[in-house]
Length: 99
Image 1: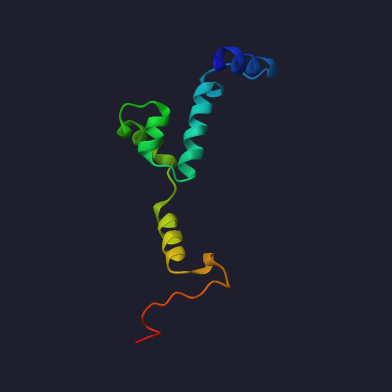
Image 2 (image 1 turned 30 degrees about the horizontal axis):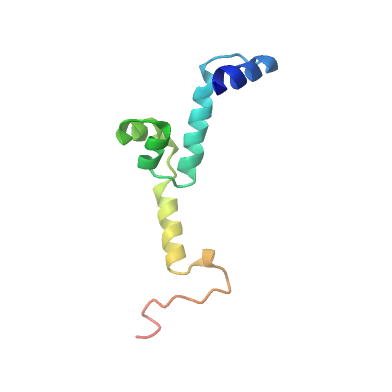
């Protein structure tokens, strides 16, 4: 109902071509992109999009997944109390200080 009753009339009123590149497909792709960027799992996204197979979701949206190197670096920095923890955060002991 949203597509035919709201989206398509709004697209037509703006003069934007009413095609696949400006339709619900774009909204669906944007939804998936935002969730993946926020760290949502492929399995959960697959269920949200109604895909029967998370493998299909992965093949379709894998190019949108954040770079694993950046995510890994942030996770380790946070776990070890790196710069992202803030200047006032207590320094994590790495074992060398107490050796």
